[in-house]
Image (cartoon, rainbow, N blue to C red; front, side, top):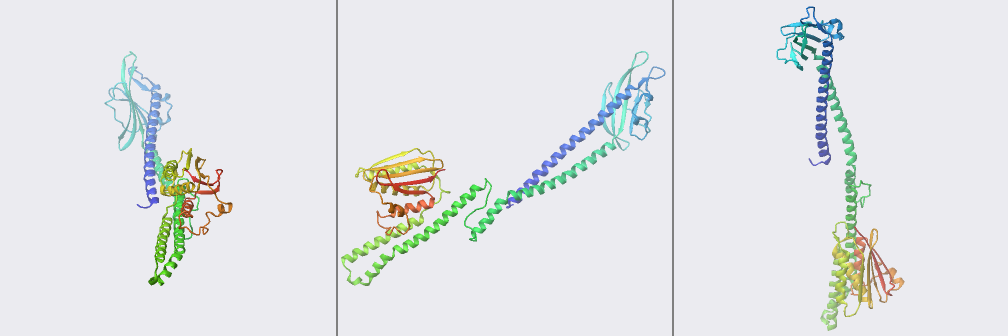
Length: 447
C-alpha cells in the first residue's frame, strides 16, 4: 500500500477493532460473572430464609419447614420457577408449594457442603444451590439433611443474551463512528501534506516561487529547507545568467583585438605576437574566473556544520608566512562557541580574499575579531592602510562599477566574495577602520 492515508486507515481499523473486541469480551465476561454471582447470592439469601423456617415435625425425630414462616412469595407460586426441597438420608421430606415437577436427590454432596452449580435438567437450564446440614432431634441426636434450591435460569440467560446483543450492536456503531471520526481527523492531519503537494505543483507550473503556506511545527523545517533549496537554485540560475553576460561582455574587447590582428596576419611583428599572447591569456583568465563564479555552491541548508575559528587560524597562519617579508602583524581574537552551516571552500574563499586584501593594502597591522551574538556571529577584519573614500565605500559592491574584473588587485577577489555572500545571505559592510584603513564586517547566522 503506497498511500499513507490507506496505511493509517488500515492500521487504525485493525487496532480499533482489536481494542473494541477485546474490551467487549472483557466487559461481557465481567457482566456474566457478576450476574452469576448475583444469582448465587440471591439463592443463598433464600436458603437462609428457608433454614429460618425449619422446625421439628410432630414426632420430633425429623424436621420440616413451616410454610407459615416463609416470606418468599415465589415459593408459593407454581409458575415462579423457584423451588425448594428438603431431603433426609432416604427421601424427600418437604417441598415448597411452588414445586410442580419432580427433581432428583443429590448423592455426591458431602456433609455440611454448600454447592452452587449451573446444570441442564429436563432440557432446561437451572441454577442449583445445595446445602448439607446436621439438625438435632428431640434426643439431641444429629441427623443429616439436604436442602436443595432450584431456580429456572432461562430468564437469566435471556437477559444476558439481550445484554450481549446490545453490547455488540453498540460496539459496531461505536467502531463505525470512531472510524468516521478518525477519517475526518486524518484528513485534517494530512492536510499539510496535501498543501505541500499542491504548492509543489504550483511551483512546477511557475505559479509560485516558494512555499508560503502556514504549516505545523513538524513540517515547517521541511518547507523552510525546501525554500532555502529553491532560493539557492534560483540564485544559481541567476548567477549562470550573470556569468554568461559578464563572459560575453568581457570577451568583446579581446575578440576585437584578435579579429584586427587576423586581418593583418601576414604583417605580424613581435609586438603583435606579444599582444596576441596577452589577449589569449586574458581570455583564459576571464573564462576561468566566470566559470568559478558560476559554479559556486551557495545555500546553507545542505552544508555540514564547520568551525569558523579553525578556518580563521589556518588562513591567518598561511598569510603570516606569505607576508612575513612585509612585517605585517595579524592579530586574531575570538570567543566563538557555535558552528556555521556553509560550504567550507566558500568560507575559505571569503576569508582568504578579505584577509589577503587587508594584508596587501595594510601597512603594518591587521586585526581580526570574531564575537558571538544571540543569533549571529560577527566577524570584523581591519587594516591600517589608506582605506577608501566615502563614495567608494557606497559603490564598492555595486554591479557594473567594477569595470575590469580580470586584473589581479582590481576587484576580482572582492567580486567572488560578494557573490558568495549574496548566495548565503550574509551581511557584509565596509567602513573606515579606527586603525585608519578599511574595516569589513560580516554577520553569519549560527546554528
